[in-house]
Image 1: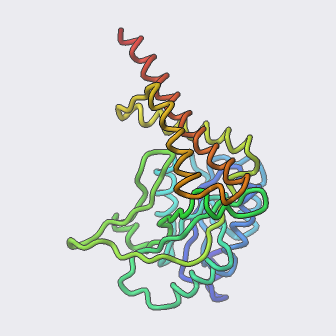
Image 2: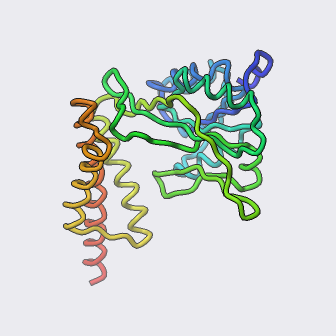
Image 3: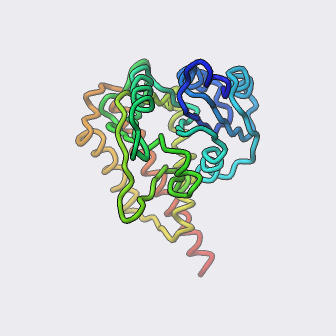
Length: 274
């Protein structure tokens, strides 16, 4: 999409890391059409129609070995060439209100602004979850110069990557919030979503265990209860109807699975050590 600068595209690179994202990546590419001058995609072995969709949309595709969420996204950010870079997952897309906010922000005075936050909402069974997991503000849009200088980049612990900006001269980074919605098509159906949550919980637990984290029976009981309570009571997920209850239950399952893996890991290590 680099050629789109001539038709009024913003000084913006959209970057993606992906593998077998055919079901959702088309919506993402369409939402970036006419907005970004460049789409950069790092693909780690797609075998479905993902590559065809990317190439058909004019994206600049690099085929890479998967190096984890944090390192792969960092590499993708560093491959961008435009003044601003926007991190979007293959199962996310920009709604029209977010696109309009993006245009207004980048065509206006951005002097002194380092980055922008967007609110991500899950699309589930034909509608947005307006309460479960809300609000979910994500720093996704930053100046490329901050990536190059090392002031901005991906941190966290896989699979939970986080784009962050360091302040300068004793001052905090200057960020703003964009109005609109970043759509998250993460739930095709609950069985497949739960299977993915088990995989992510396992990755997270393994990384936490390597850092010295341990599970316990009490945490296995308390953690899912706390996660469920947070969604249903604090986030008012019940107001989303059955969808909200299902989302809260899935959150509890993720929390419990993480503790189960940690407890198993600690138990096996203890037996081997003994």
